[in-house]
Length: 401
Image 1 (tube, rainbow, N blue to C red):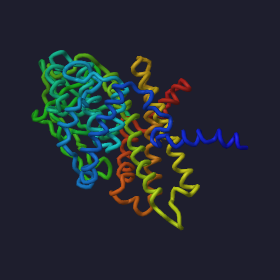
Image 2: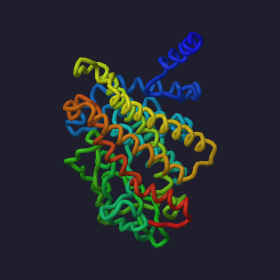
Image 3: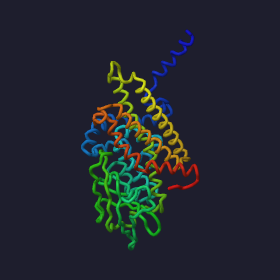
Image 4: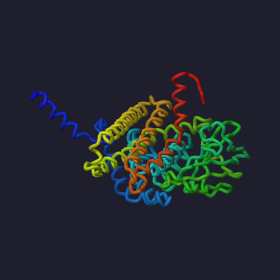
């Protein structure tokens, strides 16, 4: 008995050293550069985002004053090579998204759209002239971009696109509309996808072009610290030099979505960690019936389940990142990660909100803000059902869309 008791002591000590937000020590699997990137972004979030984000959410205001600070750390187009972009690896980009979303989904959404949905298609499919014109200024935060794909009649069916462009001499004439466009009202350039006689093509529509408008969508109860707009095109003339020459068809926009979905799969982990951290602090200090909430079995079981889900999501995201770096990542891999991790984060945010009791509906506590944001995150860049059907198609070989 004494021998068994003695052998139990080191286990207890090891357990006490575990990081409750990183139970499997994912951080130990990171390179020095990856850890440095995470630490730098974490400091930005702690020092610049968290002090203002509650007020911004309440005021329905995106903190534009943070853009130069995000740019100064190289967070805009961070995974792209050249053109004043940082050229960081996939894990670094994932960690950037995770730390930013620990602050707020709206901040991560801004960076995701700028990087994955606007800068990436210009970098991947643009002409050399387009890359030189737009990418350096976008990396510096001097030009803001938005991504026009989703349409009012049905975002999950991009092949049924109504926005169209017709050739007129050397120019193109663009007509149609887009909906739920992050950054739309402040964007200097919109990457707009439209049908043509040749197939779907990408157009760079600059702010101020006659016939182009981008009114902001008001009265949102989610992503309130993010700018969302509609885009309208009424005989908008786009010169040939603003058409992306490197891609025709759905491959263009869908490849951009895969880049964004990858970042989301990492980002939502940060939101879940923020909720769990606040709940751990709350249950340790909230006393009911003569003892802290954290001393109750039911509370511990629910906390343990959150930690299990976060750990699973962390390991999934890390492996996804390594596959992306190795060039073996496929769209279905991204769908599985986006589906699993968004569901994880939303469930945790909802449960944390519930466990905070009456305080859970107060903006002074982050879970309700994260919960409301994640209702959008689980929907955009492919709804949960779309990703489930993507995996179902892989398993059965039958397309049930």
